[in-house]
Length: 414
Picture 1 (cartoon, rainbow, N blue to C red):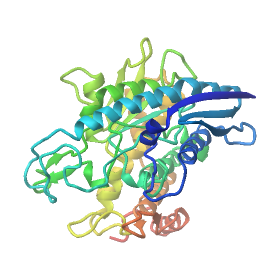
Picture 2: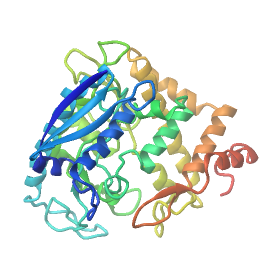
Picture 3: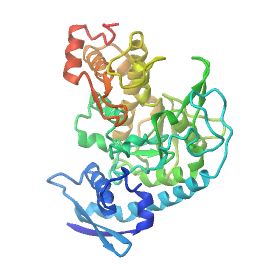
Picture 4: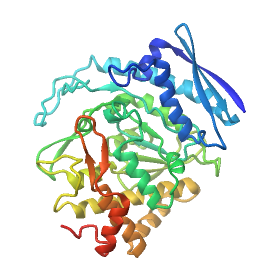
């Protein structure tokens, strides 16, 4: 057993780094807030089991805070990573402070008019600094590059992985053979390119009629390139199977693909969904990368119309075929992620072809899994628009029974 003491810094800095209080009006102390998030990290790094337990506490001396961790020798790794994580956050906070004083003229035609400013241009009052707290930081087997975190992950959920997107991806991992939730957490570490919590619709809004729409991205992901480089290098583990490789990266959504391309690809190259690259991010090591549509796109395709939003609890008429295609694409991406993590020496493009063949060819078992996922995840339901607590109106068993009765046709009830 090891005991590790990690100086966290001054109270004023930690208040900012941990978005304290997470929920306005909360009586939780700063120490309790830090421990809330770090205990999630311990659990998702695999340090919460009976065979591999670790505990954490906070010591306060004046306004100096110290994290004390007791557990297996492997917890020593936090001594290097956690302070660097905080250092990156402090630099990002300086960027945010500058953004609050910058102006920008936004295109006309957005549903909600924007003011000529970069920070919270639609005056939601809900933009807040929020790093990717509470996820595996030492033992992750993959890295997921996203745009920004939805505000509900901070307030009220207080859990980066208690959200329809990571829940959906974990279920897609299970369909690809990774059945233990504890294993899935090691593939769920997120690096959001912009550490700004905001409402869902602040990522991308559209002007014009489909399909000739213009995308407008309100969250300024390109302002954080230095932060992105530093966080990716920090969280990009060397593969445990071959030291010449790192764990794979999945880049989700158009803004994240653009940012990643600007960071790591040639000037005339842009990563797109279902495209792979091999890059050198850590000197002397190869990293396999794949682009993907945003996982939330499935929910939008299944449930959004002119008069509805995500969370109504069922698939809309005429939406099932498009949602099913998105499901297949996302299953391919997740299978690729698992494949490259388990054999980093594999050619990424060959692996992608094999994953496409697996999910695009007819097979009774795969057809049933696909149908079940479409019916289950297509029933996403928000019980309260204000809290965004979510559930699924069809659990996996109910969805499976539907598919068995309908010859594995996810769109049988059109």
